[in-house]
Image (cartoon, rainbow, N blue to C red):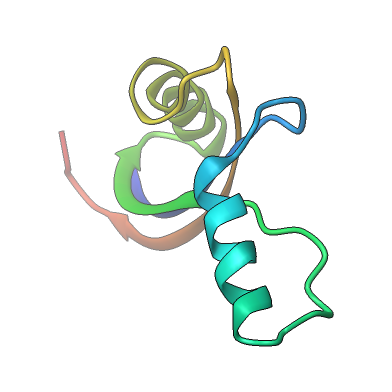
Length: 92
């Protein structure tokens, strides 16, 4: 029996990497007189649905997907939340 999961993936720049988009947003906020904003970092949020035989197998696949496709591991970190959404009977 396969299980369907929803993955919520968060990709962020490593703390040591300059974030020009974040700097631009922070500058814009200061121009709008939001002087209480100290730092802005911009990242990516991705949702996908994956079917797997187990949560562990889904996590392994997601880790590989993130590492190979969704994030640049040299400059980005990623994490994901995995939620079971339904069991699929007879799925291949």
